[in-house]
Amino acid sequence: MFEALNGIRGEVRPGQGSGLMLVGDAAEESRRLALERPGSVSLIYMDPPFGTGQQFTARLRVGEKQWKTGQGSITVPSYKDALDGESYMELMRGVLEACRTLLTDDGLIFIHLDWRMNAPVRLLADEVFGEKNFINEIVWVYETGGRSKRFFSRKHDVILLYAKDAAYDLHIEDVAAPRPGGPGNHMKKHVDEDGRVYRTITSGGKVYRYYDDEPVPPSDVWTDVSHLQQKDPQRQGYDTQKPLALLERIVKCASRPGDTVMDPFCGSGTLLEAAFRLGRGFIGIDSNPMCAEYARRRTQDGQLSVFYPPRSSSARLSAQAVSGITSRAVYLNEFVPEEGLPPEALRGFDAVDSWAVGTVKDGVFYTLDEEIRSFRTPGLKGELYAPMGDEPLAVRVSDVLGRRSFFLLDNEGGSVS
Image (cartoon, rainbow, N blue to C red):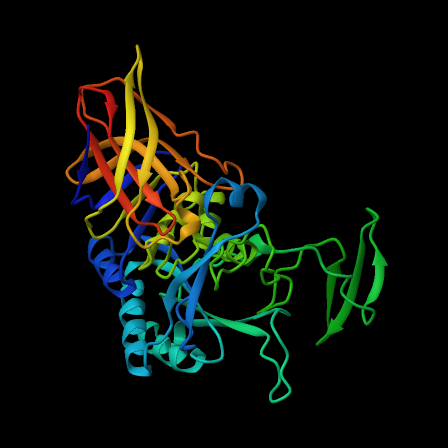
């Protein structure tokens, strides 16, 4: 039969690359990482709380129908951005100091803020990284949101860019884009011997040549990356999610394939997906267990280790295990979740967001096969496989709130409940 397992502290999923997700406090986990692996991270991007005082929510899709149609969701709390000024700055100091230790000598950090905390965090970052290591204040302009008649509408965020040291590795040529509409009519137009159009301007007695078809790196004002619309297919349902294009630009220009990048407030996991797509290893930290599901979903073919505080679960599982010639099949018959789910999540397998079969060693679950809901796979087959072996199988089930339950199967196989 399946016996409930307590004390599980982590999971390892095989796959491409190298990914790590830590469920816990950003400052505590960052400090622990800094002790364990100083100088190991090439790029850190962070999108910390903005000091809004708001309770933010997540809109979660539940069950096969909502994933298949993209219609309907449940709304649950995600995080409360309510730290007072002193507590907020204490949090940021702890994270920034740990991040400086984690960065490689040529590493870079991008700190994403808005008008509320830009000034105090910049002063703090000047102190932690040194004023001389400040590189840019990037202004990300967008048009979403309402308009105000009491003040000029706030339509931009600020991303502070710092280096750990003077010899930093920033290669903005990797994010150059076609020149929008040519360089302008104030320049004289020419055509070279190969038929390429270029323009010239003279300044200080020197002639500068600009080709119309030559890509141009972005300036420190980014107007070409749109904020996510409400119905954008990228959306995970997380209130403060940032667009993938924004994070891909940052990853491309501030790291190289094979490097490790990190987000200590990873939320919906956009940086993790960008890193995975671009061949970087990644580390994500967030206190919300739902964020581990975002990380699983957005890096489905990638290697991912997830670690968290052990917990007990009152969920119940009914399943069947069948041994074949070369593999063992596990069939999910029924899952009774813990209390706290809304009624929409209590029909059949609708409570299940993902499940996996694997083995357990020293409190860590090693995934052998997995199913997770997504637009690509909205339904669950309820059937997973593991190779034949003497080790007992275990099952991990995650409900729509990201709560994990583990069960151990003895070697007898057969029907279990």
